[in-house]
Image 1 (spheres, rainbow, N blue to C red):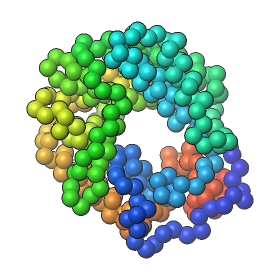
Image 2: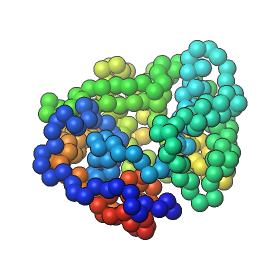
Image 3: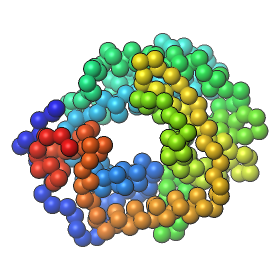
Image 4: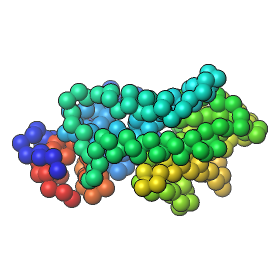
Length: 288
């Protein structure tokens, strides 16, 4: 556990309306999800931006795995062959990059740089054996960003799609996830609105071409696995759009009102890099 006693913290929360100039100039699924989970953490992450107490190894690991997959599909777009060694080179380059130099990495129990490297190697091996490693079609986009309005009273919403490929008369959107356990259909359903939002935001590009949505889940288990999981079609595209727009509107109104209160819980606080600054903790490093 990292000691936090004595480090500066937030003494009070903003209570007046938040000036638009300090709010993000666009919204994203990750921003809205974080604001719903813990408004105080959103405030620290996107508005105040104080130095972090630590960087969670899970976030650094996920970014490094994404970097390996990105390098793989960029090579495919260029007609180049790539192997597990090249994937690990991209992983290492990402891992060694210091976004905040001097900030310590906080590892989970029984984890260190070496164990995570071995886990990544196993996950890449599982991916290379999957059908997605050789998609029957054309890769047309990697880490592509799309920005489009959902409503006139909201900032534009940005989507960053990990992989886009065309096959069998459809365009496929894939979002990669790393997970401690394999996803089931309930987990896919829980996460589905993220990709349904991406489908809405990319509609100007996809047009009338059918779109299929998938989560590519790499599991950090003792025996790593890769699963390409389809997202079932929504009952009504109109209803999905209305629900997502309503959620984004409510969350944005909370941002504008300055409702950046802490929401302490084991899920929110255990890996939070701003705990020493949070008024819910008052510099106390004790767990939730």
